[in-house]
Image 1 (tube, protein in one colour):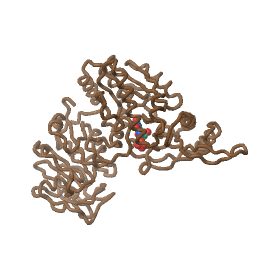
Image 2 (cartoon, protein in one colour):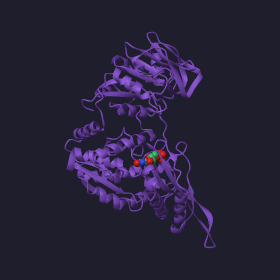
Image 3 (cartoon, helix red, strand yellow):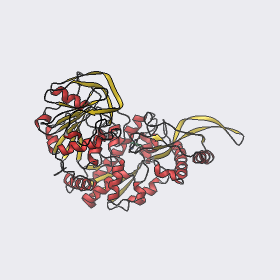
Image 4 (cartoon, rainbow, N blue to C red):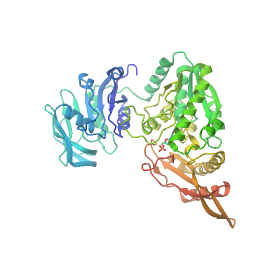
Amino acid sequence: MKNQESILVLDYGSQYNQLICRRIRELGVYTELLPFDSSITKVLSLQPKGFILSGGPASVYDENAPKLPDWILKQNLPVLGICYGMQLLAEKFNGKVKSSSKREYGPAQIEILNSSPLFQDVKSGSHCWMSHGDEVSKVPPQFHVIARSFSGLISALGHEEKKIYGVQFHPEVSHTPFGKILLKNFLDICGCEFTWNLSSFIEDSIQQIRELTKNEKVICAVSGGVDSTVAALLAAKAIGKNLHSIFVDTGLLRKQEKEEVVSILSKFPMSFHLINGAKIFLEKLKNVKNPEEKRKIIGRTFISLFENRAKPLKARFLIQGTLYPDVIESSQDQNKLSAKIKTHHNVGGLPKTMKLSLIEPLRYLFKDEVREIGKKLGISNKILQRQPFPGPGLAVRILGEINKGQISLLRRADAIVREEVEKTDEITRLWQFFAVLLPIKTVGVMGDKRTYENVAAVRAVHSNDGMTASYARLPWEVLDRISSRIISEVKGINRVVYDITPKPPGTIEWE
Ligand code: XMP
């Protein structure tokens, strides 16, 4: 980002890293999450005003524990270590860290022992949220203890002159109610001016896309969903007619989807290309059962179609609407300390030898932030409120092997789920609602005759960002209508079940 103050969060593998970034953005400061071992050149190019060290699963005394980078203390900038980050700082300044006999997980209260600008406006006795098995057992010389937990463990320490601080609890989670005050105090200590907002994000992204692509032609992958539409519009604002948006009919789309998307996107201010890829996707997926393999094949097939279309245009860049949750679940957040859940087609599913250079302006944002940006760009509510639909489409909702017959079954069952839910008020509260086709048959009886047909599962979930989800308690009447319509209208399905698994432990999609 040009002329943009930033706070850099160094990634030590905590599952809450993205929340730290999000809170800093909400407070009005640009932030990026970087691998803990990033190069100093990369770090300085982002003009940091301070650093946050994230939590992480390691113990500082583990042999291969991720370390504090050499360059960090030489910058003489404020540092805030969270959980593992605090323990790293304590160790670096000759304190001691050990496995604690009183592990703290979940809610806790802290007593403030010494005042510090980091804790301005935070009351002693405040509630916070902890998740640690190690503790700082000896405070480093020159540091003072700012707070202890009610169970007596060090919860916050600081070196006021150097502006280096550590907190054992997680200020980024909503269960630490004063967390945002503490993070704001840290940003004040860093001398931040709080000038970042989503409008400046739009301006910066447009400027960056222009600078990166110069006067070249660029292709952009669009699906009709909110993420790719926002990415495409940002790019259209940046480079106008040099932008070629490409929509692929994978043959794995929902009923009427191709027609709807083409009619919306062909009106946007950019050249629009439709690729009919149904045959090739079906061929490539023949006999493939394994979900990860499916996802990778789909990712690669998308790219090869994009590359074919880019060639005659002499385009070198591909713009995608990848979001942060896609990145984290595919375990492609740069230092790979977090676990892989599934390979999102647009992240981990990309081939290693890709010829196109990727531009992903939304890579660090969450869906609700992207919807806000979409609103500012004037995108219609119809697109902004569309439920997420994964790039691999119905392929990850037909468990196991895929063929035309199953695609048609699922497409019809899914259309019924959507039609029935769309008639209710529930729709505004739901994140996603869809049908899944199971690779099993069960016995039934219809019109006095035995049936032996497929099972459809219905999934409807609430979520804020797709990272966690709870199943929706759809009214019985809605479930009744869905079930009886699917069974009477979709020949080949004789049983409907409802998925009541939250995420975690389930994921939203079944594959
Ligand atoms: P899971 O199934 O991992 O999904 O709980 C979280 C959210 O991500 C969507 N999803 C995808 N989106 N490409 C996408 O563009 C993918 O490969 C992909 N896989 C899952 C899913 O629909 C849900 O909203």
